[in-house]
Length: 575
Image (cartoon, rainbow, N blue to C red; front, top):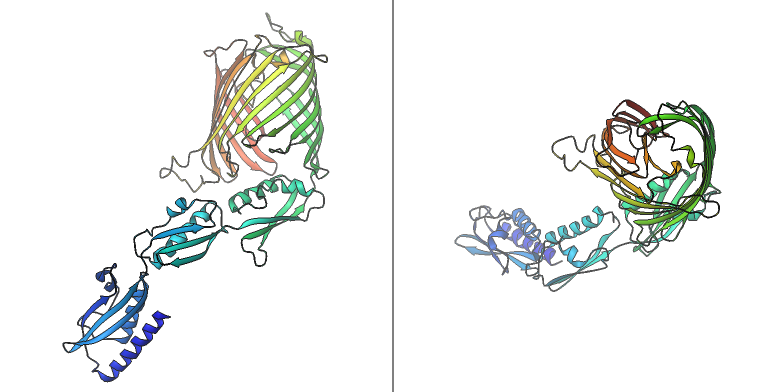
């Protein structure tokens, strides 16, 4: 109001001046009063009224507006007086108070010290409206950049030189779920990590929705927000789901260089009884025949146990047996495996454990087509093996990234026990680490980073290191570490190298070519034997292709080993 009054007074003065004075009356001098802190030159720099120019009502009004918009003043006026046949113009200003303190309330995500790093206005300087508005914008930008898009500055109060800023951090009041007729509400709710009372974060919530969609239970998942009346400090989340069939019957057809032609059927329900249980029953028939059934509850957190039970029966006629890469003979195999396991996450959910009990009954027979001088260290190991396996995992992968990113480590202990019919007693222990690193940052400015290699689909280096040993120099054939095949050493037949000790390294450079197509260059190295011989290693290298399909990531690898080249077809990454 004071600024408006000043403008009206100036208009009235200039109107009378224009009526009484000659039109050509000149400005003889321009000054400022009332500015103990802000330099006169700085103020007049925005004024178009200059000595020697004709006095203009419109220019004076524009100058008052421009000086006021500098942000340092609460009041601006213009005074006029006769001077040497012309007019002396004096702009009268009233400075804002000098800042004594800036304080924040309502902020819980960041400390006041962290917010002050975004503030350019400092104690001991004259308060500037424009500068401080930019400061508040930077504070909100900090919140929004970290995903807290509903946070805003709700109020600013100035008392003398003290500035009080109120931050509003809206919290989740309720999560409402609708549209589900089969899926239990708790199955959906546990995938949403935002709880009542949490500050809403759009980045994490978007990831939760992605995980919910990825369960495969729903055709669509929509979300809406509702702010309760007269309470803008909270927000309700409303999830609407559209369910789809989760049971399916699959036809399997395959051909392996060793296992020959095979085929079978699989029945799978990933959301049995709407409780998030996974049931799978199936068989493959051929030279290698397998029959299996598993039931599992894969979800686990610090309060919820995950579990699985199952059985698998396999017959394999005229299977090749290798010893250190050399084919020794053919044999027939019969194995029946029954297992049950459970586990959960620790309070720090980066850590988890899983305990598995397993009983395996193996029978080897009908040795034929043996090479001269072969060593039969297989068929002597018929019998029942009962084990207890404990896995401890530390998973530091970024769960909000659209690609594998970060580090995961797990270690395993497997103890064979001679109880309830078990015939063996040994301890196996192995560990592995997997690393996934985006190379986009390293190549910034050198390659098309942000184009084909985007932040969501970057050039990626992936590595897996595994090492294991045992308390026994010679393990039963079914319990030995084995290397060879599409999931370990890709340039060799499956189970080409076996023993009670092993080490393995897999290294891949995953190169996106298009959104659904990528190339992979790889190198594998390792060995398995009765003794840990680091000098006696086997390696391979090659090139792979990955194609995203509705059935998963199609994988084709061509590997060059020490003696032959091999090509593999499958789905998913090796690690």
